[in-house]
Length: 321
Image (cartoon, rainbow, N blue to C red):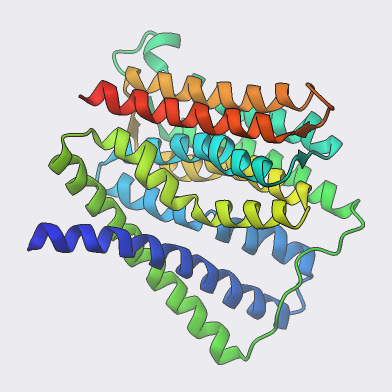
């Protein structure tokens, strides 16, 4: 009965995580608006970080419990899922056009993030250390890159004609209630997901790394999937692809930066395959934007993304057999 309850709470945890993030964003945004903080700043800070809250909370719990395979797998797996499934589905729904900034600056930044992670995580290879890990120094380095990225984002936003997020102002009591409820949902959901992932790994004989790379990564990426799919359906290509690219940069520089600053994350050499896959997907996204009609990912390319993801997951499962 205890195991069944753990599995149920694992899936309920994803629901709490997603709703908790939304409540936290809505409540915090409303409260910030009451203090006359501009919509643009709210969008760049509260909303951006709120959409990454599921990955962050799961990683903090995983790091605290010493489940480093889940912590690293969650981020790398989320980035792979974002490109191959989320962008793939968005392109299948409607061809995705990329803004020139996305093509020449943001996608290369996502590729850089994947490369930096590969370098930071391979101490045994580059520094001839006895073991590899993401240390506090690595975490602070990633956060420095995140600071540069945020400077770029603010600069682009200032020169943009868009006004930013439209924030709904709620009663103060309701805003505070949503913030508290959102935090509670994130904390409970994150804890249940990590505990459930460990139990599922034990029950089915899979490694925690594979569980983190697949089930946990896909679950924490559900908000991005919904956002990009709806944006693509409505013809908002910039949002569909920008959401994916921005999330991938955020995941490595911000979330792994914070996690590894607080907890040392041992890195298994076998995980280099997944990091290489992350690099490959970012590179393939860049290549597709220069093939065919140019600066767009069409339906066929979206289908190729999805097929690659199916092949990748199949490989992970076969290597567990």
